Amino acid sequence: MAVRVYRLSDEDGNGLKCDLSGCPSDSIRGPRKEEDELSSPVRRGPIGRLKGNRGIRFTRMDTSKGRNERALALIAEAVLAPSSHNTQPWLFRISESAIDLYADRSRALPINDPDDRELTISCGCALMNLRVAAAVRGEVLQIELLPSRNVPDWLARASFCDQPRVFGSEAGLADSLARRRTYRKRFAAKAVDSTTRDRMVSAAKAEGALLRPLLSESVRGQAASLVAAGDAIQWGDPDWRRELAAWMRPRHRGDGLTVPALAAPVTRWVGRHLAMGRSVGAKNRKRMEAAPLPAVLGTDGDGPRDWLLAGQALQHALLVATWHGLQASYFNQPIEVTDLRPRLAQLVEGGGFPQILLGFGRPIETVPASPRRPVGEVVESVESGQC
Ligand SMILES: Cc1cc2nc3c(=O)[nH]c(=O)nc-3n(C[C@H](O)[C@H](O)[C@H](O)COP(=O)(O)O)c2cc1C
Image 1 (cartoon, rainbow, N blue to C red):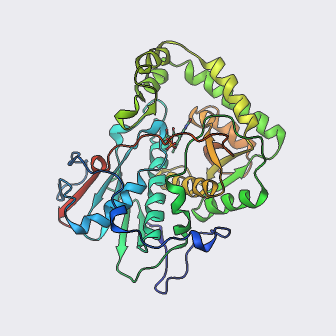
Image 2: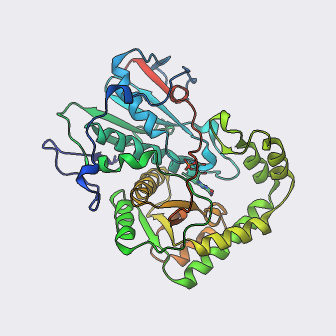
Image 3: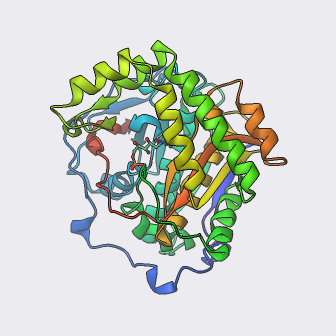
């Protein structure tokens, strides 16, 4: 099986493939102080054994062990990635020489995302974050996607290369990791300049995906109509509503779409029982039409490898956007609804398989970061054996 290997730097520390032209060199930080390295508490241990991993023993994460610390610091930043419904569908396994990324399909959304396409994209986003977190610490990671045909849950291996510290070009994006947000309000009515737009397109291209801005008013209007049509179909489906409601959670749960603790049961009831497709659709259509820069992220193929590329491309573009003071809204309804996806693809001729429909813009207010589970819930260490 062909594997795609990313080398973040060659032996001389050159040859970095990401185009970050425009990010000032002083934004590339040196390695952090040790006390910064564990930004999230590690509270819990084992998370069960995944299918297909016979022969490898996984043990409770012992944070006192020095060899785990650098990996944990990277994972603490990887989990800041966006994920569909904030499901955080990832698991990390740390060994002496590598961090392995697995899909946690117990957190799948079978109605909204029956093929785990968005789940895999979300994991691709986390992988991009891992690369950025490594780059800013001068770590060189070698990435292999889908390392084993027999273990489909094993999405990637990030191997540490024992080389002198090299600060990869992704390092310039490190400050964006914690500043990125999904923004669901109206954006400031300010156009995104073409230089910024081009940088986001280049970022996606560097990862093997296409980010196609929707510049024509007519195309944007048609895309907005597809969003409204998607809302009507999704909200008309009681199973879809039930699944959404199940992921509406108070912040202290550490995952899902945050609703205030007191309102959570009411919101869940409304989500489960009322079809709100028309009102939600009308609102989303307006938001999409008003987004300063709507864009479709597409890939040449439509399998797990393409989804992992799409995830890295999405996150790379989002981090570049954040660096430029932008945030993004998602309008994925016409991609999630099977019948609408070809219609969106037609609108973006030559854009490949649409994977994510976004609107970028400048936020008018700061929104709080969405919650994350403690790192210890998503990490295991490998005690013995080679993966
Ligand atoms: C693959 C993928 C699909 C998403 N789809 C939507 C969506 O359709 N609507 C939406 O509002 N947010 C969507 N999101 C954003 C998530 O809801 C968001 O990442 C999550 O709630 C965590 O919040 P954060 O991005 O601010 O950290 C998506 C994110 C990913 C990675």
